[in-house]
Amino acid sequence: MPAAVFDAMGTLFDLEPLRGRFVRAGAAPDALELWFARTLHAAAALTLAGSFEPFPRIAEATLQSVLAQRGLDPGRAREIVAGLGELEAFPEARAALARLADEGFELLVLTNGSRENTRTLLRRSRLDGYVSRIVTTEDVGAYKPHPRPYRFALEQLRRPAGAVTLVAAHAWDVAGARAVGMHTVWISRLERRWPLPIAPATAAADLEEAAALVLSSAGDAP
Image 1 (tube, rainbow, N blue to C red):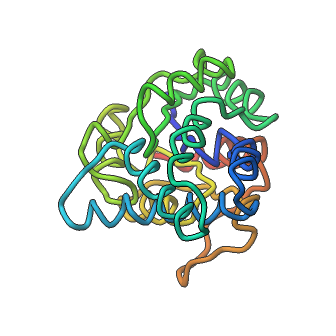
Image 2 (tube, helix red, strand yellow):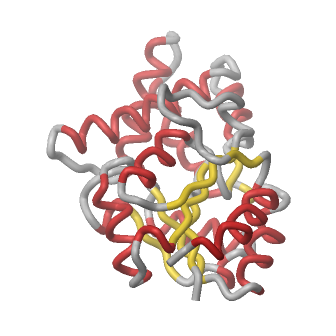
């Protein structure tokens, strides 16, 4: 059975609804991107330093910093971060996962987010029936793009890296998967242009196009 791995936040689930929470707290709309980038940077920094904290704690701490820098009340951070549990799937997500499942793919979600929140999002969006399991950075005490989360996902799938494709909307995530030998598809709708000074990944405009690319490359897997 072939397999594919999907990132969650920004890939399967749209962060855009959080923007309204930032605006209601008095922040400019672009504070969403600043906060999310800072959260990912903090998670990677803790991993490099040999430490680990749950994603919700990192997200709240970095948001408090963003709000304070803009002269806003850091106490609003918790209510904004709570919005991570109410994200909606991208409109084409169900069709993309269904297509792969119908073709016999085992689908796994690999996320920096918490297992509880990811399970809630999948259930609310009715995507849980397509996903065999959720792997989070909590399982290995290291955040993507460290190799450990990807290797653990491969262990759960019981497949070699070259037989699995990661689909993600973040180039750094693609780079992490590529480093352990996985195939990759980069969804370009967030970053628009490949942002890393390494060879660009195979690109898709959305999840449906990504699913088609995963299917087309399945025959190359060992």
